[in-house]
Image (cartoon, rainbow, N blue to C red; front, side):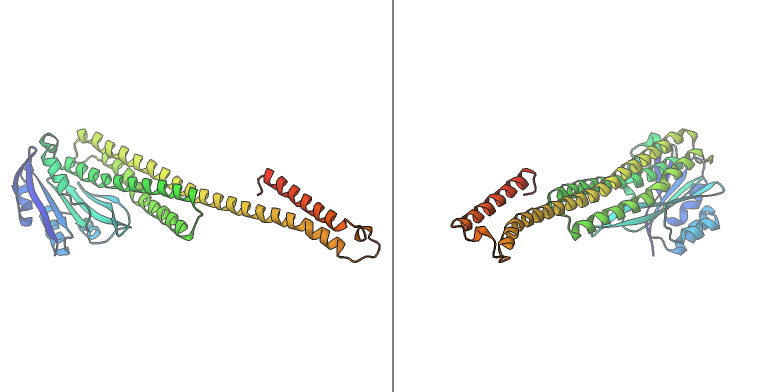
Length: 323
């Protein structure tokens, strides 16, 4: 069984009375009055009750009983059906809570499925601005839409800080499997955010164009303002995705650079060790006609040549940064 979070009647920007779920129809029919009902995880019977009271289109009810994958806006006669999603983190896992909005002349109904930020904050804000609330259902629709979009901003800021931390980490430490998994997880979350934010821009454009009795033309700038915020979120999201890609690329480049440095060091030491090995190999061939073998100072001369050659090679590699 769902829960009625709040149900009230408003007129001329002020709350007239709190009502039960069954009283909505009679109040919504009164001139210059509208009903605002907030539900949390309503059951099908409650939605059917609302359909009968407010003459909701049967396709709108059918759509409401389903679960969706993206935000959407549907029009049914002079009524709207909106599906929105609020992002939340549960045990560091990004999830999205669905909210359904029914809006028409004389009523606006919100149904939230999950534990996102409650819309009681929206109701308090609206009631504190009676001059704007006097616009009626369209202002409440704007306020709810704006609130959902506001929920994305703190999450985006958190991802920005986390990506900056990842960048600093990969600059100072070798890229580990845990780092790769972390970056890939961030990229996946950003792609999911885009999937849910992207359609909101089109929804805001549609709300600016729709000519419904309960949507005042003076409210269109408000929906345009929401569209601007959505576009900013999309721009920031693009920047965050680039940061994630750059962090991964930087890690790969630094890892490649570290491996190259190690390989150069191995090559340099191999060259240094190859010189005495070559000299020793020459004098280990045991030919009889090798004058140096009978020379009194031959052994010391060979050691001197080996030492000089190794020091020279070491100094040369050191100069060129191989050691």
